[in-house]
Structures are given as structure tokens and as C-alpha cells.
Image (cartoon, rainbow, N blue to C red):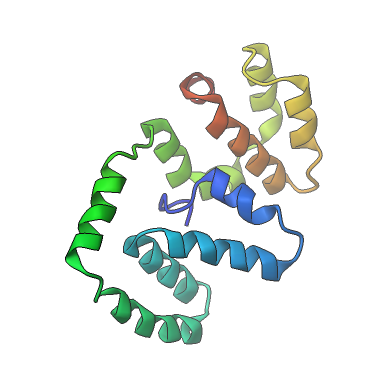
Length: 155
């Protein structure tokens, strides 16, 4: 859902703060419920792609109920969304999130970002604390998404 810009790195961090899978699932559902219909549809697609067709089928009945929302509510939601803008660099990172976390080697990138004074030694230690390479890359992505446009250009 991050690659389709339906979840942000902050959302992911909010979900992963919980230790148990049940709590993480609840946090994800809370986020999806608070968002618009397109987020729900992407979630349905993700369920189907992950082999949870039966759950997606059950939820599709709920999607029909969402179609019955009053027009004024829908207009208010659209107006609220129009004030919310995401910088292009964040969109690009999120759209390429899966490719980045699965393919890059973080060592030289982190060294370069430290030399540019965009990351600190503490940031490096936080990244290195993860066991797997993909975990390290996820931490790096979280840092990049919060550092701003300069960090992305240097990345």
C-alpha cells in the first residue's frame, strides 16, 4: 500500500509500534477506515494479491455500503483532501519503496548522507540495529522521508 501512496512511512511506523500481529492489524484497519474509498479499494487489491480472496470477498459487501454515502459527506471529504498535498519526492520514494528496500546496499548511501550532514552517526546506529538488509533499508527510507528534499537529492 506504500507503493501506491495509500500509506506513508509514518503510518507504517504507527502500525509497527505494536508488538503483536493482532494489534498491528487493528492499527492498519483503523488507518484504512479513516481514509477515503480509494484506500479501501487498494487494501482490497492487496488482500487479493496476497491470497486472501475470501476476506476480500467478504469486505466487498461492505464496499457496496460505502457507495451509499451522502453526497455532502463525499464533498466534504474531497474538500478536506484538496488541502492535503504531498511533496513529489515523497511520492517518488513511496512508489519505488519495494524496489528500494529489496535491492539497495545501504552502507555507502548512509556514509554519503552522513558526509553531507543529512544523517548522523546515531541515525547510522539505528539503521544498523536492524538484523536483515531489508530492515536496514526500511529504516533508511524512514529517515529519508523525514529529512526533506535535500536528502532525497543526495540519495
